[in-house]
Image (cartoon, rainbow over all chains, first blue to last red):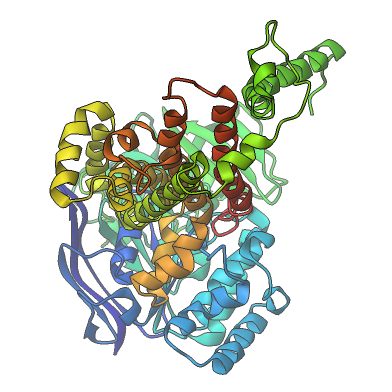
Length: 358
Length: 281
């Protein structure tokens, strides 16, 4: 049984198609992250699942029941908003228990549930306070508690960490992951942060212009991106994208003499314009080992970030970035030979931008 | 605080004192007139401070002897309280739902602008139609009729004010309450209206003052003690062959008291900043 199913969801605002047919099915206990830049329709999709907006076309099914036209409160979902959306005039305890209060749960039972949730989130000493007396991280916990206490079928998170500072964001991210592992709840989580997506998700849906570009596990999204967009969106520093031409099982990098031999699985492909993608961490300094794939580039900028050395160099007029170990010997202005990991080559069709596989 | 030179500090304080004087001088003069005896008031050169303090006019205006100036004044005082109070309450009852609706449905925002546009009409343009309407309803010289007329003045204004108040309350808070299972009336009662309390208090106060100070319509639509309001009653004091300026001043002082008391009372409700903390920040 699927916990959530979206069937051909479309949303039109006037003449603009915000969502162009979204299909996906979520098993119980999954952590789905909707990842995309702003304006890709991910928040609209979340609001449609929540019932705060209605789809122009298509069906939302929660627990095998169509909820099209069903009021948000009757969908058995809870949502954590980007702004937290706590009730400023109510105490933390009443904020958390509000959903139960509205559902006429007896006061004693309510208090017990609120206390249990507060304990789980380590905010039991804040129950008597008002939201204005809390820090950002504490407010975030209250907002999560308000969703948790109702024990819904599906949790919806709308960029819940984007208002926290970097350190707190990391801690809360880990906390969320722990909660998910502990409670085994089904979660739909919207973010534009690829790190959040990679760390939290069991599956990621990369969205672009109202459609899902790729729906897969974080591992697959990272290691086998289906399109050029997915490849460039996930990863930091982003994947190098080199314009090239496919000729006789090799890729000739545009604007240079460099020729990269391709894996045997790609040898039979017809000649055409392609994009060769190489992740910066799949590049390393070539140490005279001729058996490996290598590529030569002119070093322009060297940046030490701490754990790694980011080297920006150029091949012809194209840019190549490499993440190297921090103590690598690289001289600015010199020609440097980089070797490429065998499975570190991604080839995309220049026209369709889709991945080319054997 | 930024550093300021001594001269600048002195200048700022002098400017504040000047502003205070400009605002308070007329009120103070009104009070001095109200306790000056008639010879002091008409003496030449002017006596800035009376030789004898004369409080008799307060007694005159607050007496309840039949057919006295006092009875007329007290009756008009109560009429004013009734009319302004009813109009204010009615204006809030009308304004709260409409302001909320306009705030949460931006696509119908134009309708509020249309209502505000009628506000631009000079009152005299509406005097005749309103008179005929009240006459047809049998509400001339009636506090309910006058309150109804004031409602037409107050409702656009309070709606406008409340809309900006509701606009400042994030919609996400109401969305959260919706998902928590609250009905519309519960959302308004438990969440939105308490958050909008400061702006509602402000709207009520200003509406009351507007109704309290209104003179033109009151003069047209009331004719005796059953409905005459304070502003008209004060004008009546000046209407005879002999004008007792001291008496007019006394009436002015007394007329200023109820709004002043309401203002002091509402001060506690006017404390803003209640919305802070609910959303990011």
